[in-house]
Image 1 (cartoon, helix red, strand yellow):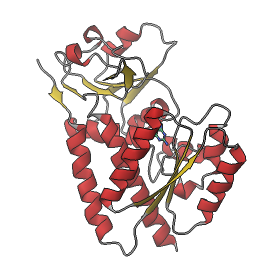
Image 2 (cartoon, rainbow, N blue to C red; image 1 turned 180 degrees about the vertical axis):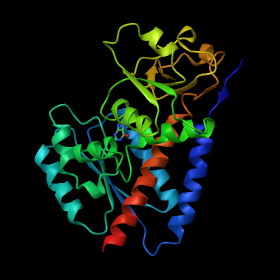
Image 3 (cartoon, rainbow, N blue to C red; image 1 turned 30 degrees about the vertical axis):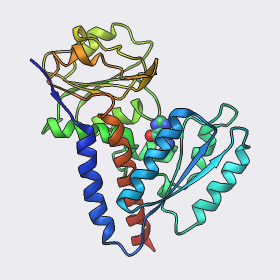
Length: 281
Ligand code: GUN
């Protein structure tokens, strides 16, 4: 069996088109502030992709770039200013931040109704109580992709590999809200291959290139690869795509799978934040 390839690039393009149609009817453009500190090469690419995609759908995107020695208080002061700016609907801080900065403190400063990455604690709580207006972009993008190949997720066994605050944990919450049976695994998990083998859905988000092998995958399982690691100039996911595609029922490629969905979902969240703020004025 050869897996169906889930084309995240195409699905994200369609989503951006639909979003642009909606935004075109609005009297003002939603506005997203992107805060980035330092010179991390990957972050630079992500930031540029976000700016380009935002512009394409009619979201004004303003970049605030600090050098890598920036003081935490300078970023926090900027966030306070953006929180009070009624023309700004969404604020994100590109991660990772330089090591001397406390990311958690900084993220907590963002006002909840502008936290379009949904990284602050109250947003996590809303997700786990299934009361969130939006959730973090990458897991939301993964869920969207899953729904293109599975009509009803209820009762399925989903194994999430990775427990990060920005992917593994929110992903697990989202899948639980869809009535999946969720197993969260991580670097200390024993018998990982055996556990993954029982999954109907595998979400790999552990940052270990090509770690997930075909022997780990139950025939027909849907495999979503969130990993993206550059090795000698080549991008690899966490899944050994070439061999797993012969066992899985559906699989995402890297690149061109989850990555474009993250950006599309961030834009969708910004539009939702805009609508909520507009309606509460
Ligand atoms: N770094 C890696 N993923 C993300 C993301 O989804 N949002 C932000 N702000 N930074 C990231």
